[in-house]
Amino acid sequence: MNKELTFTLKRIRFDENYNPSENTRITTNFANLARGEKRQDNLRNTLVMIDNRFNSLAHWDNPTGDRYSVELEIITAQLNIHLEGKADAFPVIEILKTHIVDKKTKERVEGILGNNFSSYVRDYDFSVLLPAHNKNKAELSLPDDFGELHGNIFKCFVNSDTYKDNFAKAPVICLSVSSKNTYYRTGNQHPVLGAEYQQDEPSLTDTYFAKMGLRARYFMPENSVAPLAFYFTGDLLSDYTDLELIGTISTMETFQKIYRPEIYNANSAAGLQYQPSLNYQDYSLTRIVYDREERSQLAIEQGKFTEQHFIKPYQTVLEQWSAHSVL
Image 1 (cartoon, rainbow, N blue to C red):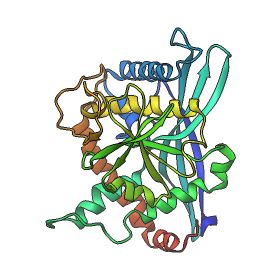
Image 2 (image 1 turned 30 degrees about the vertical axis):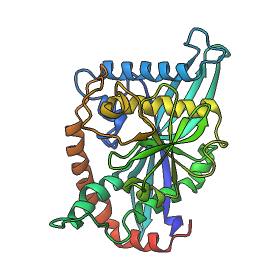
Image 3 (image 1 turned 180 degrees about the horizontal axis):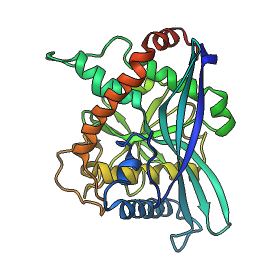
Image 4 (image 1 turned 180 degrees about the vertical axis):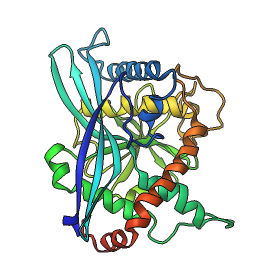
């Protein structure tokens, strides 16, 4: 069955001239910024924030704080389906690839793939399947095999020849911490990732990403105000260079300051014990225009789109493949 499921990559530069493609999820962080009359200002200011944060963390041999810049590339993984004489394609995964430009040495260093992570199938799982399963129920429960198909598609992609031919290292996905959990600072301090936190129990996102073969650690970098959640395989602390990790931190902390300012642009830093809250009032806004409510509504629309164009037409064969896939 894996022979009938292959992947094609599409790449597009994320810069101030970026325009989302027709297949891009319009709720995706970077696509959402590129809409409306403030689109170019949004993009330009976001990129400046990323570069400034990178240089603040990569401060050695960088006296003027402008040695590095970050280039971003949007990678879309399109799943090609060849079944019963029919051929179809669906954009299943969209992630960011960082490249670090050293303006002193004129080198361009490859960064980490992953960073932001978006998926139409995840929209379906969380915006269509999960609400339907819990309709009129007093307590949240998960459908049988929740996240299995999505997780197996992701693992199939990472283990594919397409992935191995294009990327040298496993992805690292960086997200916000859960507002439903409490986090406790440990004694572990990493020179780049910062202070490590542990949570009181796994979040729903942790459970979902575990189906993708990923586990989580939580770190608050220097001069950050809240920990970030890093999802990875292997060893996060030794598999990647300092500059690679800084590329991910600077990119994703910038997006979180824009989208979750109550947590990541708060005016006071997380303490030894910390529970994130989107109801927190003591925070600052960036100069970037963003409509969080609209984004939530669009996620539902995209989940329904996935159900109509991907889940329903191929549900039987995908479930069979997922149940018997060996990854």
